[in-house]
Length: 346
Image 1 (cartoon, rainbow, N blue to C red):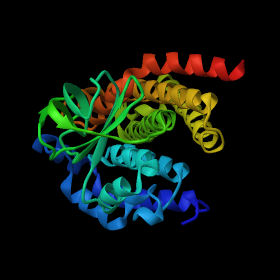
Image 2: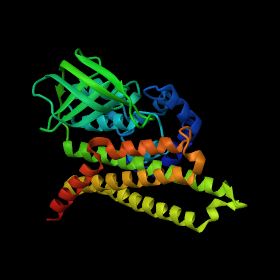
Image 3: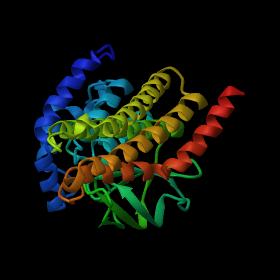
Image 4: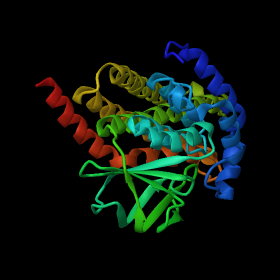
């Protein structure tokens, strides 16, 4: 399938499904139930083929590129969707250069939605094809059936959940729309696969950035609607000048981050060098910061109801905070962006 696809139409399709499947009540019920992911949403997504969006047609997918994935990541962030789909798409994309046997074994399972996958970056793991180690803070580790472990010395190790010596322990996270887990490995067999490490880091950074843009936009829109209907002193509080200014500043912050993310996605398709990776890290840092700032003030702007744990503001705020911490965190992303963009400009 060609990348020449109408992204606006694709966005409308994603949003129509997710608006119906990720309403506030459903997200709240999932959070209270404490499941690894929304199984009903996963079934819907599998039937629509979203898990194969970025996988080549020869490997059972739809063969779309990063711009289409970026749209999907944004729309999943708007929900916020309780689904380990971005991590699965990240692993699937990383495996596109793997040997034929590896792709044939795993990519059809990922493309069909039969199995989820996830990754962990910057790990200090011992050498060898059998690993004994503890891997903490694995995003969606409790939902995945396949793990891609990227080490600080440049190795990329594939690990099935069902392999001998693998113990998965779900752990609590600030963001209960997504799961976390600890992997305890005891002589667990791993398979080293060829992966473009820079491309994987760039894709991971952009996935976080796009999720942040989608979530920030959603909670800002919900806040604006609330300000239109909440009355005080006989008029909607949205008419108060001070609140107008706060919302306008948030809108400016969001659009600035959105423009940077859009440029990073475009450059990633044109240049695989230091500049594209630096822009991805910078976009991720700015988008995550905007998300935290907007979501935090949304609680304040919703007043007393916003402070209750039951309100959806807290789902967005907690997701925003986890986005800020993922894959090395915001400070590390800024440091990497500064180094890479300086290098590319030299």
